[in-house]
Image (tube, rainbow, N blue to C red; front, side, top):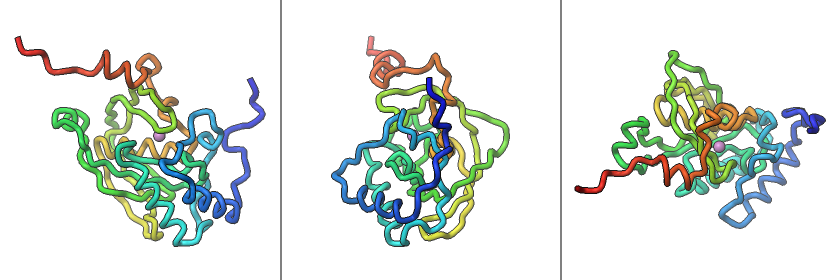
Length: 212
Ligand code: CO
């Protein structure tokens, strides 16, 4: 065990270095490989965004992050692409069977840009459901999340906004905001619920009973 590198202990990358990193990312072939668990960038505290990137480059980065999502996930945070800035995007078409959507309170979430997001829990209710992460490929586990939160953040144009989120969108916002603080869903998960996604589907996903 080596505890020499404490999480969050790295100096924040300079603006010039970040600009270079984002240009390299945007030029990289798609789909982008997502940084996997074990890479220290996922355990650092992302630097608050304060104009380290030119406006147009930030816009291009956020747009590209949205383009990464369809068919892959419902949110991604910049550290998962190796960029240690407090930026994330979420978008969920909630393209799931109606009974699953109802059980998980999974209403469609239109595209949302989270720049320097801060979450405040509303009420004391928690919901526990299986969750997965693009940075922990192939696994899923149960995580209890606040049922309702207030999200305060900036959009990509620097405009502050506040939103109350509940159900699945509240879960996504908590998951992505955690990434910016170096926290992975596994840290909050019920350990005995850990499963490969394949085994979760094979053994634990209810199916309609066959007709008699
Ligand atoms: Co994740």
